[in-house]
Length: 400
Image (tube, rainbow, N blue to C red):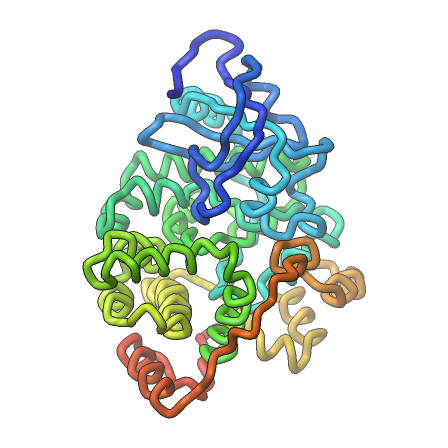
């Protein structure tokens, strides 16, 4: 399907006329488009073009052009980049991967100041994208998940950890990072809200950047899993996860190939998660979210135990004393205190006001019903993964 043109006009351009709505890991086949010609590599540096995904199997880098010339890194308008890239795509650009690596090798972003925030999902992390988006001299990259296709689709189930430490994986991770960072003016500091699989990039990124601060935003297990359950339940008609779970149930749950694939997508080969999720039945959606919450926090906990310095922010602290947490963050990052009011004001509006989460009106009455039996199942999962019980207070070291 994809050729390897050489010469000056080496990038293929396709006009998008349909997208794959059931794909939730960005990949090269998410768009259906019509070939409209070739452009130069330099054309990809236009402000409304962003990196979508990399593919080893197809040997390409894939980029998306936004409609109306919009800047995809305006996270006030597009809080989740990978979601907006599909929804607002006008053109897709396909570039041979060797050429992309050659092009990004010329970019020097090593001295750029970067704050990289991981998160456990449904924990207020998007608020911090809005805070840094409001600060002068800062740029924001909010969930550019350009490596997820390789991590999830192209490593084979159970093989992720052996791949992510390879020279090739690190080179690809850094090529995407350098391209994204180069989209901002020289001298700007960058806040990156990581995607759910980006802990796999930690080693490569830490080795490259000279001025990197790593953070993690998290929330207690019960409200986090409840929030996930509610969010996906109200999107039941369009949720890829619910669609795939239904397919797995029809195929015969424990023997289903689809089940193995979605377990892999959400656990990224974390052994305890795989074992537990394959035991959870198709109706145990709350337990699925609980295991995913555990997996995200397990990865951060493991990174901290290995010596990686990670400052943490807890959602419950933000609820109790939002301004106090902002002040602690400013002190930790040594941000100009005169910008405190700007940051505080940015937290007062809905951080996801332009995402499908807030726009979708197909809200049903599907609610999680807590029972003694469900508590027993949940607490068994949390105990196996090394976390407090469902009503317990989870606290990571180095929480601001």
